[in-house]
Length: 140
Ligand code: GDP
Image 1: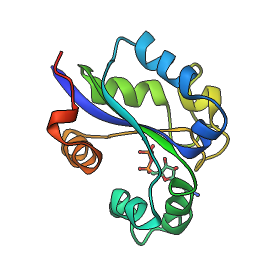
Image 2 (image 1 turned 30 degrees about the horizontal axis):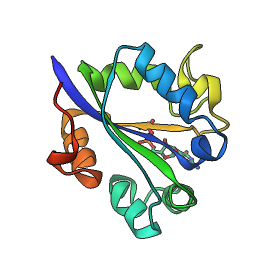
Image 3 (image 1 turned 180 degrees about the vertical axis):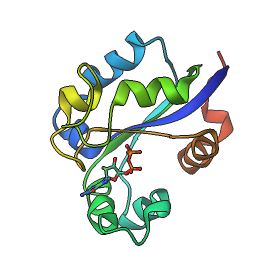
């Protein structure tokens, strides 16, 4: 089933010049980039984005990180795009991530793991709507 998912190249990926490499992985996996832009989140915007993690011990740290510099936010589209992109990213902790995944290749720790991807259809709908309006998203 054709799906849309939200991808973020996090501030560590942008500052380490990994934008092209991440996009290469995405395109090589057969996913289409239906929209994309560079943004810099405020701390409050990062807290809103990661609101499901409010109260967790890493909430303050991850929202500091996500608001520390520019990110690339993208809408990806393709067959089973949500699970396909999660698989391509690898486990949250790059040390546990499978060989060949983006996080294994480029991540440095459990927090600075280069990329974000939505984990369900409901999350994808919320996360895409958080950064994009419908007119900004290409239809393939
Ligand atoms: P994801 O869906 O694989 O990105 O993982 P989660 O939704 O569980 O966590 C969101 C983000 O918070 C992760 O991608 C990491 O950047 C960060 N994070 C998750 N767990 C930890 C942790 O135990 N410590 C720290 N410092 N950051 C974490």
